[in-house]
Image (cartoon, rainbow, N blue to C red; front, side):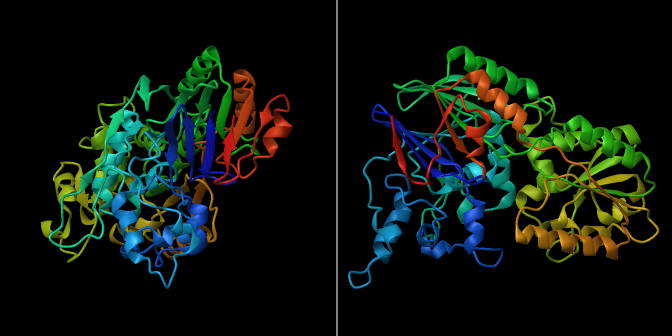
Length: 485
C-alpha cells in the first residue's frame, strides 16, 4: 500500500513537507518553512525561542506533529519539559523518541527556504538528496547568514547548547544527477527552470506507479529547455501521480526574462544617474540580466558581500555565474560595528571577500555613482546615504521582484517609498518575470503527462485544477491527513 501525507503545502504557497511511504520506506519531498503559518504567530521581534526547542513551532502548527522525523536532541528537550501535573499540549504529546527515523531520505527540490528551511529540525540520520548546485547554494547561505536555529540546514548545534560548545553536527548530503536510489526506491532527478539555480523535479518509481513531484518550476525562463526536457522524459516513462505546484494557476500573464531585460535596458539607457535595482539576491538569472544591462550601458554592477560569496561558490559550476573578482562586478564594503572599516568589524568570510580587487567602500564608489547599478534591497537602502545619492542625481529605482503578499511586506514597501522620496529618487520602474509557471503552461504539463491522479500543492487555488483539467482525477490534500492507494 502506498501512503501520501502532505504535512505542509496544502492550500498554501510554500512550506512543502510531503511524506511518501512505499514498501516499508518513507521519503520526504522537501521540508520547508510555511511563511504563511509562521507569519500568523511570529514576526521580526517575536521569534520561536531557541531555548524552547520545538515547543513554540509545534504548538503554533508551524511544524507538524509528525512522529519519527525530528532530531533526538530536540525531542529530549520536549521530554524534559513535560511534567505529570502539567501535561503537554496535544501537539507535543504525540512525539516520543524513535529508534529509526520514519523517512529514509529527503528529496530536496531546491534551496529556497520555503522548501528547505525546516530540514534543520530533521533527524540527522535522514540524508538529503539534491543537486550539486543546491548543496553549494546552501553552503554559501550557511556561511554568510551565520547560525540561525530555524535554518541550520547544513549542520546544527545539539541543544541545549551549553559551553564548552560541541562541534556542529553535520548533515549528510548526496548530490544527485539523473538516476539514484533512496531508501531502496528507484528515483530520478530531472533539472527544471526556476528562479534559483539547481532546481529539480523528482520522478519516484513506487509499487503503485511513477510519481512526479515538480518542486517549483517554470517554462518561460532562461533555461526553459530544462523544464521541457523534464516534461518529455517524465512523459516517456509514464506518470501515475503528479504532485505539482500551482503558485500561478490563476495567472495568465507569461512575462519572460527577456521582457525584463528589454524594459530595464531601455530605462537604464535613459537614466543619467545611479540606478538602484531591487531583486531577489539569490535569483542569479536576474543578477545576470542586470549584469548584461551594466555591460550594455558601460556601467558596473555593485553587489553585497553575501551575494559575492554565493557567486564564488557557484562560479565554474554553471555557465551563467560570473566571477565576482572581475569587473564590471564591484562589491560594496558596508560600514559595520565601529564604522571604521577595521578587519575586526567583519566576519571571517566577509574579510576574505572584501580583500578581492573588486571590493570598495561607499567613499571609493561615490564619485562614480552615476555609472553604477546598485543591487540593493529595502534592507540595504541606507547605504545610499554613504554613496551620496540625493536630489539632483536623477537616480532611477527598479523594483524587479514579486509584489508584496503580506501586511509586513506592504509596510516595508511604504517605508522604501519614504526612503526614495527622502533621497530624491523620482524615476521608478516595476519589471519582473515570475519564477513560477503560468496557467497555460501548468495545464499543458498536466495534459502532456496524463496522470491518473493529480495532487495540488504550493497553491491557494487547488480547486481550479478540476476546472482546468477535468479529464484528470484531482485529489486535494488536507494538511496532515494520510491518503492511501
